[in-house]
Length: 183
Ligand SMILES: [Zn+2]
Ligand SMILES: [Zn+2]
Image (cartoon, rainbow, N blue to C red; front, top):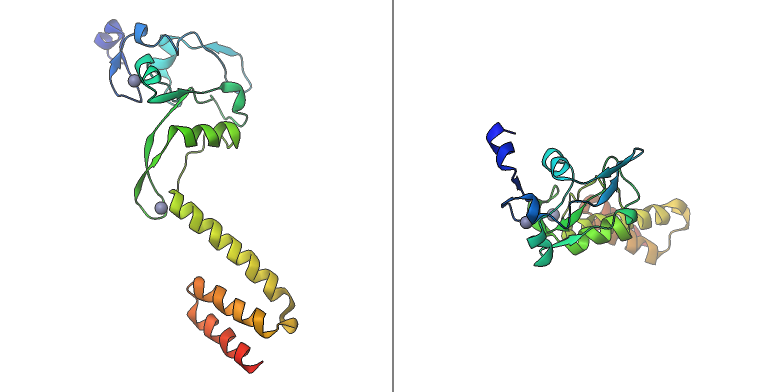
């Protein structure tokens, strides 16, 4: 921080990106937070201006419902600091490269209800997450079906062929379709 900035004592709200004075942050300042495995910390202006790892917002963002105040005790899996607030974030999906909105409500649900690891960020969009889950389910179903290769009736062979088709494995799909026709 430059000397001049320190003198003015303004910090940029991560949500609205506006420069804020201490008097604009009354809903965040004074909250008590536990650093993982460490002592209790009082959130003051100095703390917010130095730390970059946590999400927090100005009073205006909270009052206008652009952000939700986080409940620290609900976040169980933490590396360093809990998240202080949630606000909508644009995230580029690691799988498809499309930018999507990770909403504040969804974040609260992730970190406080599902109790996901607090430092982990969402890396895939909803569509890709669903696709990944579906693929995982198909893989499970397939390995169940293939457990007893000697015991495959026509119906099961057709299902295996279908699963390979969905996975884009056309050669395998054809192989099992041919097998099913022989039954
Ligand atoms: Zn703000
Ligand atoms: Zn995606």
